[in-house]
Length: 271
Image (cartoon, rainbow, N blue to C red; front, side, top):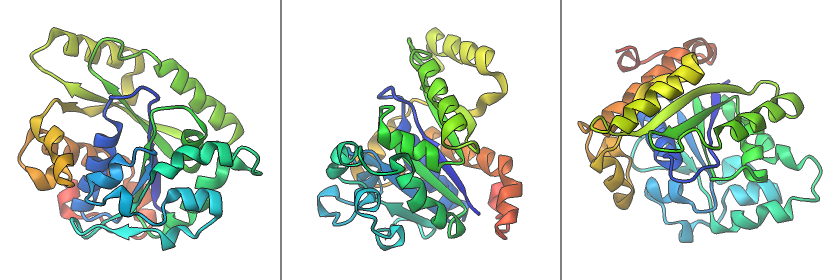
């Protein structure tokens, strides 16, 4: 079985979608079969890998609300051979209302994604900036969660609420759910504040914090406008190197799970 990882934080602007796209692309570049799931009605992850959300006929919305088979809506990206997409659409914004009276409404995404874990090494879910029903679905479907935290003032604000939500889901909906790690993003080495936030987060959360820190980087900001991950926009940029390092860190952490799927570790991944 592959590993399903949600990327979640109810705060906006912390780098969830950037991290989801570039982590998924980096895992694919390391030759791991990777599915990027866009679970945000804004559909930025969909456009970030080269698809126009307006042209999407069936999305994760149809999987969750209408019960369409998830395999029927998966799109192969033309940018990396090992990267597929489960797209989103603005219709997803109404899914929470439409699902409110459905039985087991918190498990609709799990029903769609868990069978796909046999086909992929990693499934990365880009969550919306909220703790609503769609995000609860993502956390119920996932084996673990990555929490991006920006290296700015108020970095820890709201983090306790998210961790409390994770505990509730662990106790009621998904006892398998673990914290894959806290990912520090938007780091600016020139700012004393960034360094203070790094120290504070590491002090509070210690081993939960990834060694890799994602810097502020112009190429990271530019790449979505081209509909490609940063690794294809500028492979030598600091942003690209950082997400490759994050991918390697996650691979190393999950190597036993990956070996259990029968996947052999590519030489690059061990570098």
